[in-house]
Length: 541
Image (cartoon, rainbow, N blue to C red; front, side, top):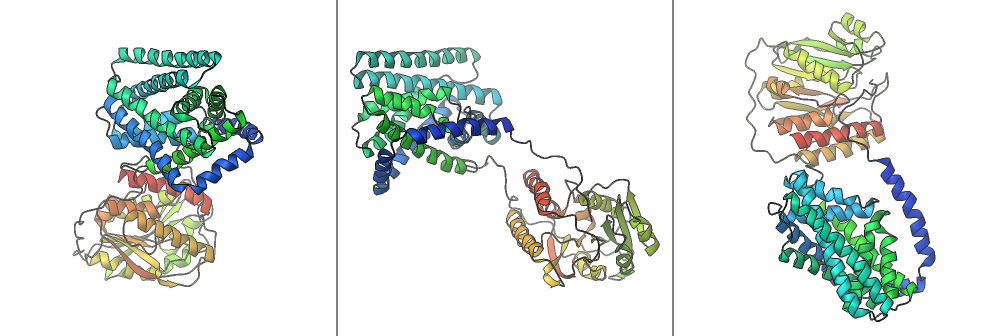
């Protein structure tokens, strides 16, 4: 049985303050909107949306086209950025901004193109800031021009000019500062035109939602409301800018002469449509185009591996080693069951005592095994690594290992090593599910089958037992094998050897549930340790 060792290589935890900020800010904003919005107006809008699905699809396509145009603009500013990765970075930003507070999606946009397109950090950052400045200038200019034509009250015209001018000036100042860096190509007229066109397409959402509410907002009005809602996002704190987006949009609705309650229903509905798109397409952008933001999830397709080499030297022994931790109750009987010969070769039995606190090592030695003692409990993966190192010292024809708890039959060693000795495989796994299972707890059977199916998918080949504790190796597979963490070996070892072109085989074995000691595997801890290790294995293979 095994304790949980210290593990390295775990990913950094997501900053808790971001999650706390998101929750603390979002709850009161949502409550305020929910108690303020005119539910009858909201029902009217969504009733019309559901009655006109084709219009909704066309509206979403216009919104999607806006980001296609922005992707082209980004690639013009940063010529070595592929349009596909530009598109993905923009949608990563959308996804992050709708899940995180303080517009923290913007760094994800930069991270995406750095990791996936190989753009260096300074240029990725500079180009992002450049386009955000161009965005600011374009949307504010459109808002001012449309606002002057759409409103009639003198105070409203002054308000539009004042807010728009501040935004335009801020954007120009950013662009002037960026000019001095020389890190990226500054926006030309084509980029400015593309950016303005993107905002025009985005305003289609506001225009269409207003029409569903029965408001004749007009093209200019839609531009004004969209501009006000977007400019208000500069001060966004809550995820998705919820609250600030509505405040800016409703203020513009009031300036245009519409009822604020109905205006809130329109702006809120437009925001909801944009949010749904952002979450859905943002998730797709995590993996499309390749390489995905999440890295590889499966092994790369391999060419035909080199054929295994049969063992012709009859003098070379077979080594069977057993990792053991506090197995005093079972180790003696298991060691005594190890055959002295397998396939006509001498068998060397090793026990790797992984810092046991009982007399496992002494009893194993008395039963006839050679024992290697680790001073502290390091974990099953570490014990297997040590077993590999010790087995190679004996210049073996084949090496196998099984647990020392009696669940696997050492008498079946012949089955495990036969494909290796005959030159049919480099790596052999004893399959309990293709063989005979005396007893396995239902939840463990289910967990084994689920994890095995996942491993088969990741490995791109049929595997019938991904967690078996009875395995055998040719000398070249043993020399190549790496177990990248101490906790366990099962999945990472298979992926490692398959990625290195080793020929894989399975043989049916018998299995019976342990009657002594306690298994170290607890599902939660197992998944927390193994899933990150599998990810690292696939992405370094």
